[in-house]
Length: 343
Image (cartoon, rainbow, N blue to C red):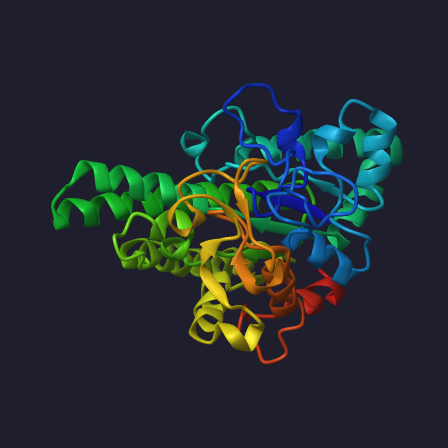
């Protein structure tokens, strides 16, 4: 299993990046429900990548690349057994999105290329290609790009026509880079792609707090929906042109819509506030040792002002992996992707 994405999937890469502006989750109350210590996951416990990995049969998400990279033997061993996670908090599809010194998607692919070269030096290129064709490539990214773009558009105060033109160009850049990512990974041997689209960007506490009444931002939700439509078309096109490529596209946005329409059905009593934070909606400051911490974490959808709780993460993973009714995955679910034979 190989993981590419942002803070929703990061399991500690950002802990090992230099600089003061790197988003990290290695201090309390992050990991408060994780056995041991804060792990670098932007969660109170495990994240979506962990639960998907568990459903495949692993103990948890594959380890962070920057934990493994200094030791060649360890990196190759992990890459050929559990896999590697390249996900980085704050990362975007576009290099320009990335604030601080995190790992943008293009660099994550570069790190995978380096990993593959080291694997091939040990096991031979043919053996590695065979292994990779059976491996599970999880990709979840785009939320940071949408947030940066929406914030910039709000500050510009442009006309409706200008905003429409800006948005079309923005989608074009995102899809071009996403296409390059999938195509490059395919050229390196990847065949099975599990892709998670962008959720309700306008319903994150960090977005709600911008509204006096704490309402969701329909503009940001619409921006996410438009990107998701383009991503869906892209994956269908790539599957039609790249022999042997198979994929499952998970609908994070659709799942959030259904969950928020009837939160109690999923066990949630709060779908607007951050469990760990401060100020209105718990969204006016980062989760930190000085922040307020909710006691009933399993009843909150949001852990901090951006990320889901462990409880929300496991429900996401279950919906994407076991989606028997094909409500939240297309054209197959994640479990079917694991077992399909790539040509």
